[in-house]
Length: 239
Image 1: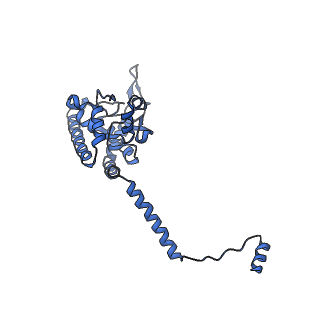
Image 2: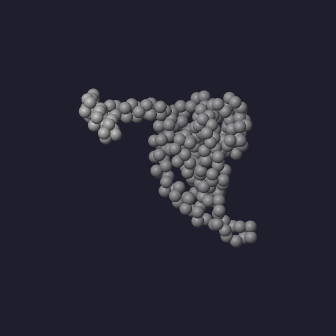
Image 3: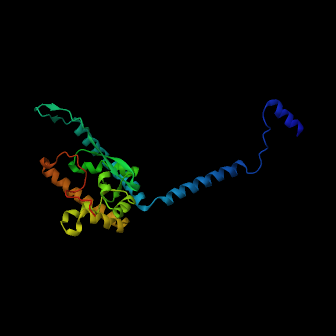
């Protein structure tokens, strides 16, 4: 022991203690077990709703990427008429950028194509679904000003849910019935949301989008560029 201390003092380093205990194989097994626990914890924390968003949202994004690419290219190449009647480039770009309030009250920049043709504006928001800013189904994403105008009760349940690409208000508000006022529908969804209702809303939304696409192909002159979001006319955030 004295020789070891003298050698360490001469070299300016302390003697390295002799390792005892687990073998390399045991240590590797321990690391694998720890990694498995972390993965299991992450999967346990993921809700069924979030898993549906990831799986179905990613599949839809892959499916519509060619259409989104063609739509973005068409918008980028489409000139606009200036006030003098000449042709000028669209300086706004192909994407609209709007601030919205998401889960937990955190704000994010909502990006979407500047066209409603074939509902490409909604489909272009699928990356937000994959990232977790939006859910496939949920209440409409509100601006910070609209969120501030809500009461405390509505603000709490809205912060507890991700806003949706579509939602109950989007598929029912066209009925014109007084109980189908969008704010009431959003509140009803917050109380009764689940996998079954979400799938039903998605199916209904797909049917509405398909019907709109067919009408757009028959009447191409009706399609137009728009910077507005996907909420229907007359949408209100009042409780």
